[in-house]
Image (cartoon, rainbow, N blue to C red; front, side, top):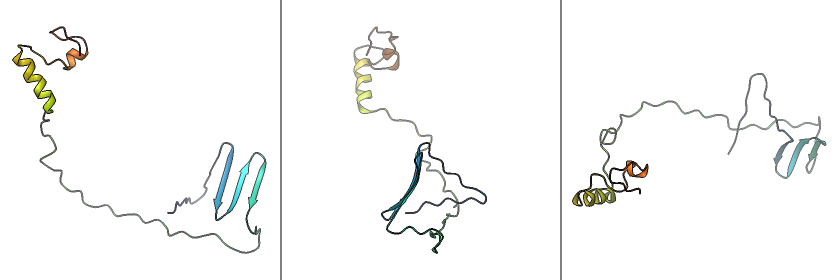
Length: 114
């Protein structure tokens, strides 16, 4: 896995208290105490070069598919529990089932609060 940062002019990475780059048992740490570099061998101006990644791989946009006609805009089907409560309330002569929104808000015509 790779993460690439690229800018034509400038890249700024800022850490409030500390900035650390760590790889392969070595690290570079910048904090209020200074710059710490630790590794098996620390080379300063003695050859080497930057690493190269695999580069960015942008996917081309594709033509979107049509929306599924059987899902968008379809009516919602009440859950079996809701249907059973509504049928029981109607059978008892009630206008609303005991867990309707009006009952939850304490405004139920039946005076019941769920």
